[in-house]
Image (tube, rainbow, N blue to C red; front, side):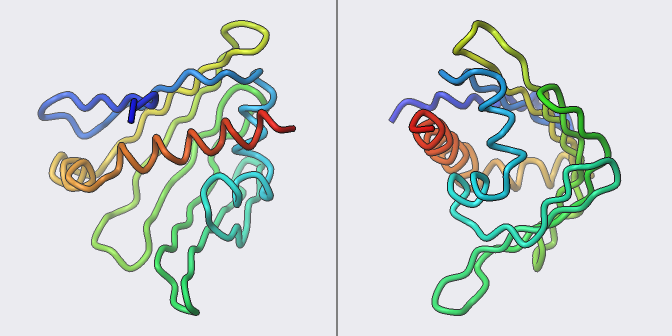
Amino acid sequence: MELKTQVHAEEGKQELFITRVFDLPLRLLFKAYEDPNIVAQWMSTQVIKLENTKHGSWQFETSYDGNVLFSASGVILEFVPDQKITRTFKMENTDFPVQLEFLEFEALENDTSRLTMQIIFKTVAFRDQLLQMPFARGLNMAHNRLEEILKQQ
């Protein structure tokens, strides 16, 4: 499977960059991160809270057979519609510390847009630990779902 979502991690740095060009207009791409119903669909998770305002908070949870498999939360530090979201990300019940995420949205053409994410980790070791998981493949699959769902709207 082609990985359209690119993950770049420079050796020895505490950050990684994620880029993806979507065959979607900018407004629809941003909506995928703003609308709780759409987020729930493409992330295959339950959106407990999504307050899209400066100092708002968010919380997602994925369960199977009544057991919580994944839980994450954070604070939205900056929210500029159709441009950027700056937020924290904390994966619950893990040793991963809070990370800082910068999401930037850019129109390339009428029906094409780009998402660029910069994620900053507490240490290089935590960043590298995440990269050893199937992170890039899972994110690519989620972004593929995002594009499929929004093309139907």
